[in-house]
View 1 (cartoon, rainbow, N blue to C red):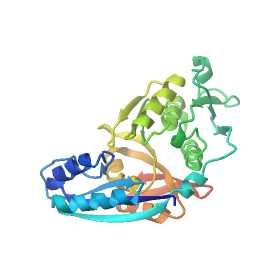
View 2: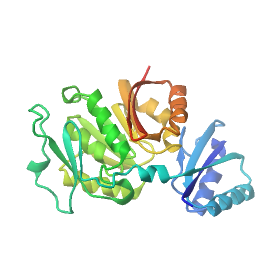
View 3: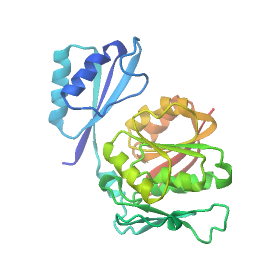
View 4: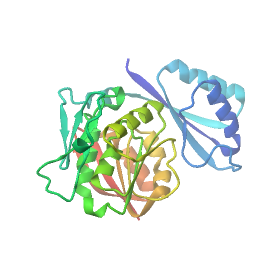
Length: 295
């Protein structure tokens, strides 16, 4: 059975030291906390989330939690990743956006002239983005990637981005960061918590002769960004709304994907609670991409 378990933990921040030691003991270092840094002296509640691939991992965690005697509430949800896997295009060759052709390429790095794009010239000749196929990160062939690129290019103009900053949270292959630099953004940053994603992004960054910054971190670097993009699955996506709110510049836009018709309402509920409003949305084979604004 193809099943993953979401485990959410709510605990008091002054007790998070115990949780962190427990996670280290269980080799679970991929947790994301949604409000404050580890170890801050506060009685506020914080939500921590991670994914377990097997039931026994969850049971081990709960048993250890009880033995370590820290105050926490756990919630376990079960879901199937079948829908995500079905959203790949099996006959994928190239992804065509209004401005670019995204294509798979070998380990060979294309000449710089092949990756250069001048948005001020006629779009009769599109720019090229080259990606290596990297397993779960794909090569631009997932419905969420196609929907997000389409929405970005409908909502933004290259001439308006030349003085703006762009943040890609959960960069995967780095496709959106590469796109943003070529599209004309003044500064671009890509982040991910998966070392494999960081490696993939850096490879594709070099392949496309880009210079944007890449960070292995769950929380983006300090600063404000005019455009933030995140294509990751719930519930991790839902927990990032407070961070998105903090990092988004005035009159900036948040572009999200990674959720389908089945969990659209849950994601919408959380972005509304954080003060975001829907500007535009695109549907691609049941998967949504949305553009949000914060008042």
